[in-house]
Length: 258
Image 1 (cartoon, rainbow, N blue to C red):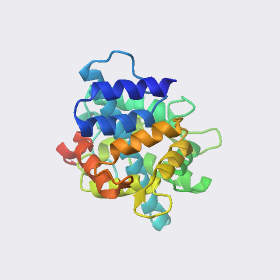
Image 2: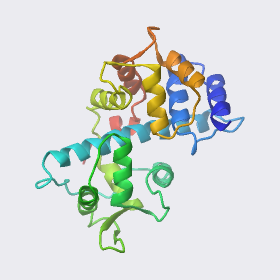
Image 3: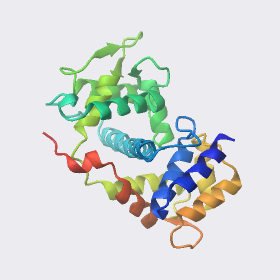
């Protein structure tokens, strides 16, 4: 099976315990797009890990934006972008973000994120949106940068976020690195189904199944055991916080907003 060879390769490649643990979890969690070849260079491995961690953090940031909207939809708006994303992102980063957009967000490969696609993303993150709410959020993202990016209406007259719009939104998040703990709590809550404060192997496997990640019960047991740094048989929020702190995307930490 593809996920078996992927997990096996990662365990060999990562000598450091903590790096191996997060890479194994993330690579299993993105098994379709990120099947590793039998031989992979250090730079390629770092690129894969960087991209997958970024996906997790972006899920959190999109979810945070959505929660702010739901708190008061009538007054919600995003600040206007002041600088084009090419002033903040390198050509290599833009290329990687483009790949990420195609694999995780633009499900029909038309170059745009629609309200329906955004709605599905948030459902995966545990946030249920009505069609009209998802459309309103997409419209807010487009409006925040409409003077800098391409704007497209769908056939039914609704707005859609272009690839360039996604780059702009991402660029506008740079310098916002004070939410690592909140990010870890959000990711942890996706797995802690009964709100007990710990993630059991059953919860671990169930959430992976909800995300269409096909791993066996045996592999779920093994992954949880590796992530369980204190060896108590469950995953704590502290263990998640340590991992997010260590692997939080560097571009969010090293750059300031204009």
